[in-house]
Length: 195
Ligand code: SF4
Image 1 (tube, rainbow, N blue to C red):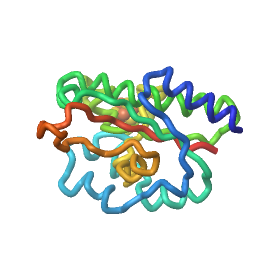
Image 2: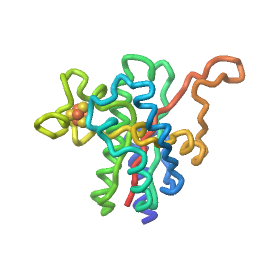
Image 3: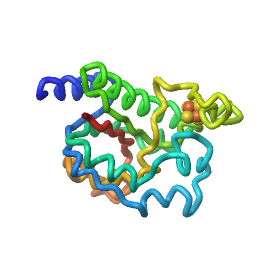
């Protein structure tokens, strides 16, 4: 088991993660209030894909699901703040989804058949921005990018800041540095439940 987890961590970093760590499933904090932020105030992506509320199971279901898991792989990608808020952010989140989905698939191939990945942002904005709608919500009921697109942690109320603190990576986005300037680097995060 230890070797397998090390392999998954190594694979995450090879794929582009800046850092990756194994966390206990009980350390994943899920809050209804965080999930509610998808619609209060309403996110511009709310309701537009199968991977976003109200089409996902949500925080209560995830809390129940976590009772059946022991571990998860948490990772982040460090990125300059200006990239996160630029037109390049779509590629950044695409990478985030691809790394998360890749870890999930590696885990499944190695026998962790209930591995489940979560990423960030809306897969409609990332993968289907040039499509009129989400194919998985239409009559075809199939995702155009099943190999990459994963649900966002936001819609499940996963407290990412608590995970960052748990693994000791800090949460200093947007804070001033010692020179009084705004921080120039930030991060995006993904999570893969392992079982
Ligand atoms: S079809 Fe597009 S919008 Fe719908 S779930 Fe798949 S990637 Fe997301």
